[in-house]
Image 1 (cartoon, one colour):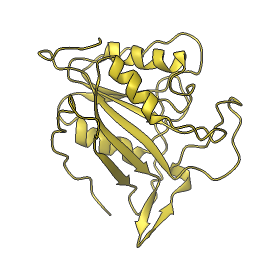
Image 2: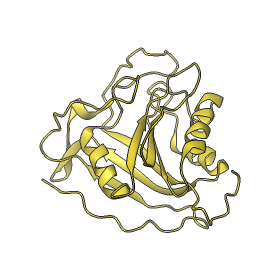
Image 3: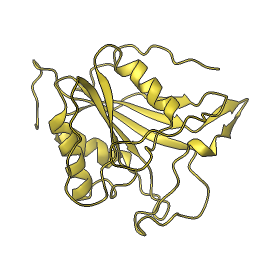
Length: 210
């Protein structure tokens, strides 16, 4: 079974837009661990193996990664966390399309809570009704908040077998239409999830737009 490998400190992306794209394949044995839940929410979009790998790569010895799956409407408030936070993983698969004021408010709420130098991860999924691209609007909104765009991770809900991907359907988030709220969309379950990695400025780094 492939093991997570150490990832070197990401490059400073301050003057570049061509950030690296990395593909994370699931272990060959399908993950049967029950999906984790963010506080007061449904199951989280990322499978347990991906959450464990994120913690190993980005949060070793520097606090915990926190899960937040904000509601589609109503007040926005992050849970209260007692100990150190290395970063926040925000599940946007239940949110309006990126660029919507609600989605921007979600990013703003998370960014304002981050300690200096901490990570912000956003989990996105395209709308099967529109196939609208979601990563670009998230990157632009995060940049306007002063967050550095570090990495684009493609979390594949399946393992490689030669030149094909063997899907693990139980690890994939169910496709949900944003134009028909909470109605399962027809068609195939997605084989991958887009995970964008951002970082808050360090204490001695100019905060830009923030």
